[in-house]
Image (tube, rainbow, N blue to C red; front, side, top):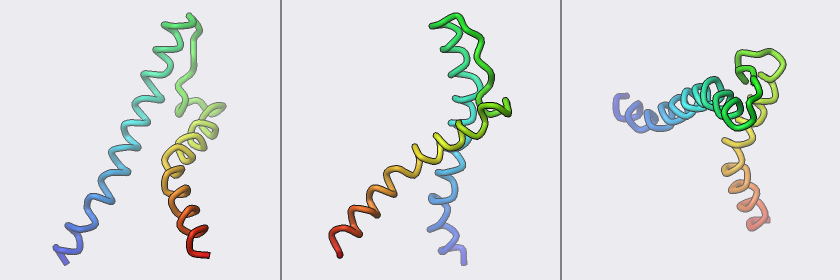
Length: 79
């Protein structure tokens, strides 16, 4: 069971790390850059209820695009 756990560990840790990095980027870096470049106050994209859904949809499309493209191209070649 430890061998199976050690094989699945990279597939568990990678999405967690990527999610935490995107959370920090969306909460701190994007509003800071928008304020610096455009001098406009931007809400935190995940904490604000008005932008939370759009931000999470963007994240899911961004993360899943490579896998979806790969699966779609494989399904085209096998049919």
